Amino acid sequence: MKKLIAAMVLAIAAMPASASMIYQDSFDDVFTGAGGGILDILSLEVNNDATNISFKFTLAGDVDLTDWGKYMVILDTVPGGDPVGNGWVRPISMTSGADYWIGSWVDSGNGAELYNYSGSWSLTEATYNSPPNNDISISKSGNTVTITTLLSNMGLSAGDIVFLDAFTSGGGSGDGAIDSLGNPNQQVGDWGQPSNAHPVTYQVKVPEPSTMALIGLGALALIRRRR
Image 1 (tube, rainbow, N blue to C red):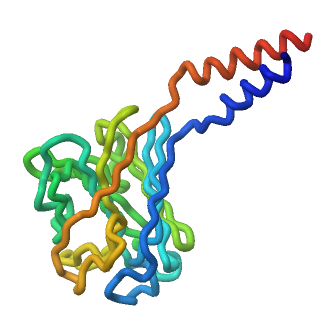
Image 2 (cartoon, helix red, strand yellow):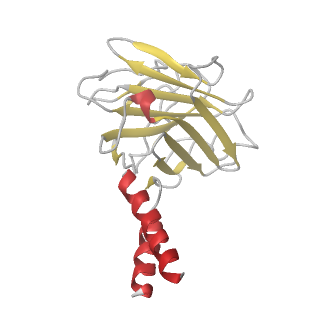
């Protein structure tokens, strides 16, 4: 009996305290080799816990060695939104209607911005802002770039369905989506060519408080029995 209870507790304890999904993209599906692979998305890992959501780009190139790339995420979280634009006014659109835009850079000390669309685009969070409007962060290492912000910054909670796409781009304000996570083929044929998002689906999942309570009760029961 003790072994059965122990196995049950261990199984519950093994449940992740966060949700994670990894989306794969094709290798070398970009029109240019500029940057040595920093514009070529290999995968995006989306991860959330009860408070934060993060987006981890894995790229074909090293962003520590070549750091001029820009890394963006477009999100459709509720009906409506902007079907033709984004927070950075890049030639990138999301026909279902974009509600949030994350733009980031890995040069000049790194930085990231979060924009919300409600009739027009407005900057809501930025790494260079003062509290409380700086609840977004970015880190880079080798061929990865990770952006993290609060779920509440995008009005997200457990069970919500999000449609999103991730892009790479150059440093020019008119540069488009050189690579799209959701498109296994070449996204554009030139720097400023307009293109549409190819959304993937993510569901926000947060462990219920009852799960953690069960872990504690199970452990307590085992301790008492062993005494």
